[in-house]
Image 1 (cartoon, rainbow, N blue to C red):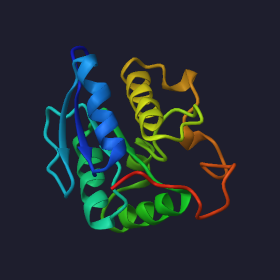
Image 2 (tube, rainbow, N blue to C red):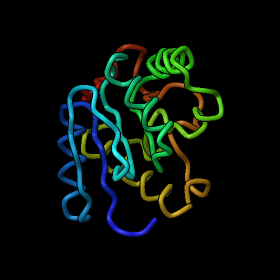
Image 3 (cartoon, rainbow, N blue to C red):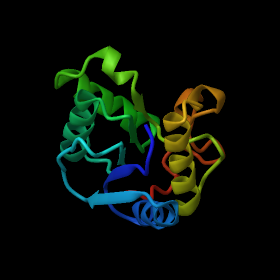
Image 4 (cartoon, helix red, strand yellow):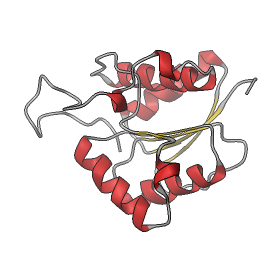
Length: 159
């Protein structure tokens, strides 16, 4: 998978803005949609920051079915569990779900939108370069995503 990737960013808000800003100097192309968007063959990665089942679910389902190289979704463990159930009841099998990076990003302790965007893009690079098993992903860690905060206190800068 050579060349500059084309990322479909689904959602809005500060993390999407930071993703766009970081993709620019990398020479990566982005398409942004705050609503359900079609997954196209030229999308190398689909990054979902939305937390809305009617937006997230169909995009993730379609990206997994299309064999998109990287499919990732932001959200808490509770959001991931709800999203997983939606996907399972809408035709996505367990095997396909193994290709979903959720929660998204490398585990660098990211808190601010720019840091979260950096962690996400680093994971995209790791997957594209075949180094994903050599680095720790947030989805590989058990427990709370923000362990220093009480449940419900984390600010979600996504759409």
